[in-house]
Amino acid sequence: MRCEPLARGRPTRAHNAPDARPAPIPLTRSYAFVSVWVPALGALYGEGLPHGLIFAMFMLCITAGGSLFSASQFGLGVPAVASLVLCAAFGSMLLPLVSPSPSFGRVLAAFCLFEATIGAFNPAFGVLRAEAIPPGIQSTVMNLYRLPLNFVVAGGTRLGSVGGWQAVVLMNSLTLPLALALQTVAATQRKDRRD
Image (cartoon, rainbow, N blue to C red; front, side, top):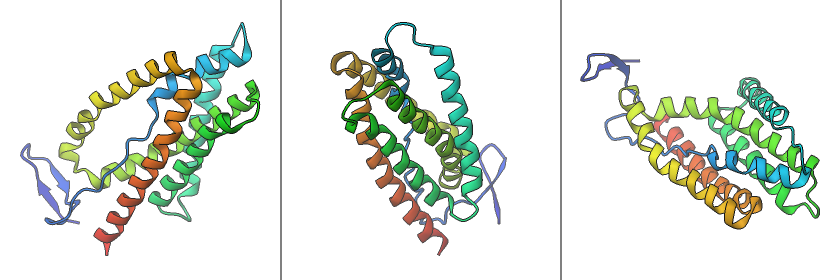
């Protein structure tokens, strides 16, 4: 591994050959989800929804998902784990929509599974991001995504107030296959760079 100095004088790994492009990495964390779980579960539970307990369950699921990522990458590469996680996230968002009669327990279980996929995808995304974006510009590139991401959150919140929680869950569901397609392109480019 060779190091190249940056303008600031810090050495970095040479991530890409001069003719290679960074792979497109999908930003797939569905921030719009944070605006949908309370209305969705509240509508199904009724009065007295235990917000703190449910939030704690979600945090445990994220932690379990992160542990699952650590255990799963021994037999698979990081791009394969990321792709499997995106498939599981897609399935978890579809469950409340295809259920003939969505109950509180089913929707809560689907949301917990979705949170676990977020926990598993975050470290995978970090690895892929570190390989695709040189460290010297990583924070700048990631900050460029924040403004559009805020528009997605605002749009999801507005969609939830107009179309109900099912519309936001559907929006999340439809973005996950796009993320999977982008992840597949990124994995192909990553493999081509290594060959």
